[in-house]
Image (cartoon, rainbow, N blue to C red; front, side):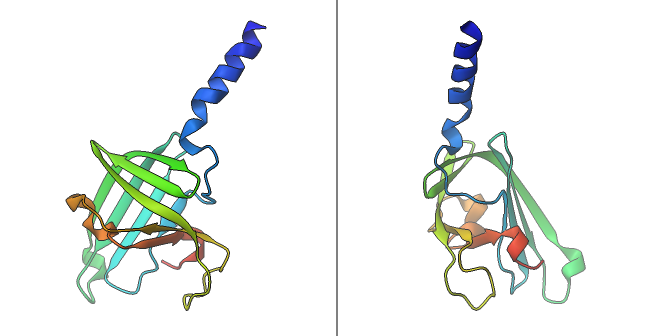
Amino acid sequence: MLRALFFTLLTLIATPACSECALTDTSYANSGGGETSTTLMLHTNNTFTLMHKTWQPGHYDKQKKSISKGNWSCNHEQLTLKINDNALTAKITTVGSNPLGINEKAKALSFGPNTITTLDYLANEILYPKSLVSD
């Protein structure tokens, strides 16, 4: 009886961060098309790694890279990234018809305006499942 109760409590404690979450992937990236690259990796322990690279035209080999880490949570159609005392949200949306050739049924992360200056590159950015965008 105690074993069953313990298992039930453990399950309830572990699931709130992503219960009823619409996320379908754990790695997301922007579609490219410029001198930037952004990749978001959502880890199973509800931490994330966000990597942003920039370079001057024609100088891909001289990239500047920034890495941010924090915690993530998801509730239905919203992903929240937390870094220190700051939080940033993204809507989980269906891609739909697009000129990029990305599966129309895929789920993307659509960020709105951003108030976290260290993550200003995420303002109004869309990140797609990394498996569906080319590097």
